Amino acid sequence: MKSLAGLHLRETALDRFGPVGDRRWLVTDPAGRFLTQREHPGMALIETALDGETLTLRRGDDTIDVPVPARGAPERMVRVWQDHTRARDAGDAAADWLSGRLGGACRLFYMPEDSVRLVDGLYARNGESVSFA
Image (cartoon, rainbow, N blue to C red):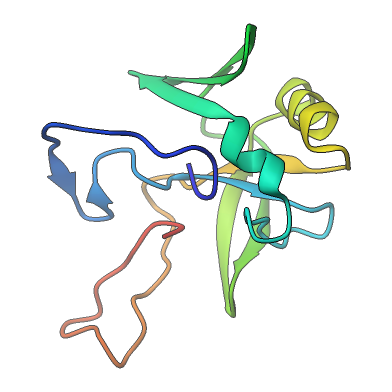
């Protein structure tokens, strides 16, 4: 998850986005622009865990389980820095939970397998893609 509390891993597998599951979820403002800890330091207090197709968000004893949005879930263009990419909305329950903990309206999005966000041309060699990193 981009900009929430970090995870410590001993090892991980890789896929075309990088570490499996890494930064495939994104919190945005209502306009679809990504939120960061720089602007919302409370994001650092929200821990994450990924178990198969379910993301768990935790702040203290308060948790919510969010399933990976299914094919056919509402999609929209979201913005990370200057990039725009298509993502699936994780629904109102997740948005309400995050909005309540971050003190302002926000949405949660997931980057599906068929979404494309290209690596900056200064660093890419062969048109590689990247997650919300």
